Figure 1 (tube, rainbow, N blue to C red):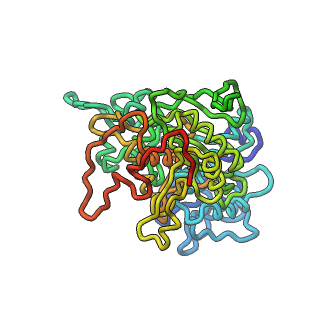
Figure 2: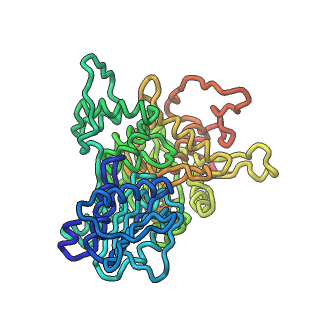
Figure 3: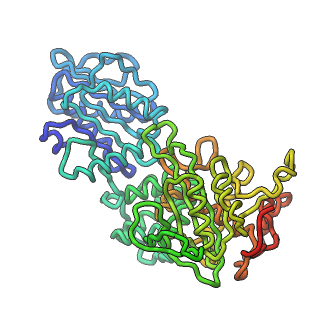
Length: 535
């Protein structure tokens, strides 16, 4: 605030914080001070609920009651949460609930505090109307603060502010992002009892210890975790974040558990950029070198005794956020899975025509020992599938009719994986199931090397209507390419090595056994790579 005020620019702060570190108290105090020392100042405080607005107003009224030299006030209007200074001062401090803000067209605000913005009924629309009441000159102050509530409008404002500061590190004439970690708050620690037995530290505690957390802080966390958060570490991380990233990844309704994304993040690393080409004998070879587009990122080259699957998600050109024309379009992605260790060994991400991407996938499939492969056959992806079919590729995935299909004959023998409302949830469940730690540890679990894919896992949420999809403005293309590759692994026969055998699954009465998915061709004869054409 001081830096922006001295520079003569608007005060614009966006604050991400832990619970009860004093931010609201400070912001209310500054708003009251400005109203008291500067005539004709109007401050507006917006809270998410009526109870919260009442709490903030009582705090401000206490400031005035404790003022050593209070100015004369007007008689408050019944039911209004406001303080009005009597003429000729005429400043006004008002607290309102976000869903009931009554601004007139000619109102001009000098100081605005937006508390817990994500919990407002219409954060984007209400904030826009409030900000439009500010003067055009730089003599005003706005503070937006909240704990994280998922990947929402507040997250977008935070990301935009962070990017602006990174691009202009020496400027203060922009929105300044400020983060308050619970580790910085001196009250958030507790003496460890002499006979306390720590046991094994969980993933969160190991991360906190790496950031310098003391035993007293870790013990305080364990106490709050048990007493106030129901033992849920993600709820604690949402209410008491230690980094901005941990705040957002733990907040909202995550579809993929934090323990999975944390484990996947540990194995992320850059791969080698290669371009796949045909030599004079028609064999696929890889050429290296830095390439800005049109390359495969490879972590493991094909091994002659290994078995692979390849899944592709073909872009439809849709915006990642339909309500924001500036958001990026979805992307075309490929994912190669090594079947013995369940390890991601290659990926392709970018923009390409459906036919060109089909050709890229075909080269990659041949390179990885004639891997079982499929671009997603939804909508535009059919053109990519056609590239495989016309080339007579021997291990193009073929689906069969869903049970109860109206015209099962038309479904038989169709080429390419197709994601439907019937199998989409199963794909997600299987991805989580094959990523989750078991009693034997992480052996036999999916190994992910792409940090972009883990980013997609962390922003893959459960919406208000229960659908699992990417957050607005984010992507899930690479994640679904990986899910398709995993489904091909579960559905298609092996050619080089035995399948990793899981313990037999126990199914509740009446639940259909998913060990052999109905949408695959389990037990199908492997046609082999030679002398075979699709019928």
